[in-house]
Length: 197
Image 1 (cartoon, rainbow, N blue to C red):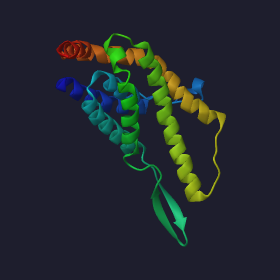
Image 2 (image 1 turned 180 degrees about the horizontal axis):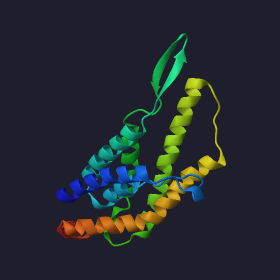
Image 3 (image 1 turned 135 degrees about the vertical axis):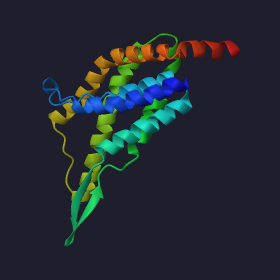
Image 4 (image 1 turned 45 degrees about the horizontal axis):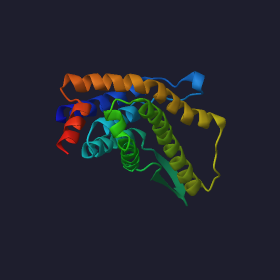
């Protein structure tokens, strides 16, 4: 299991690099392809809970390092830099979504995969929605503006989930192949644990 955990860390890093170079999808009104949430959610299914939390911390830290935003806000006569999205919030988000996905782990270990693909799409959309809401609330507080929502924003949130929903079976299949190559079979480990009980 330990080698597979480190493989998931490496694949998570590669997914962040790859998704950075995938352009927005014009047919989904600019929705982005996010691979990292799907890989993290697969880890929530295949790894024990403690390792899932470690993977969530790694993925959340990488995500925050790439998406942290600092803007300049004028305060009186001076300009002060303000962080819009704080470093570390994605760790909590990924850990929460991973914990929810871990609840479906027994189904996954028994060979069911449909609900997990649906959950991957939903959770990916929730990641984008949470980021949008955090930015909106922060900007309303900083600039005393109003909440702005357009259909294009809805497409970008929902579109990311739709793309993740369709990519999840492929990602899960590839990661299952990788786990088999390093000799980690989550279903076999789960069956042994049930036999011991």
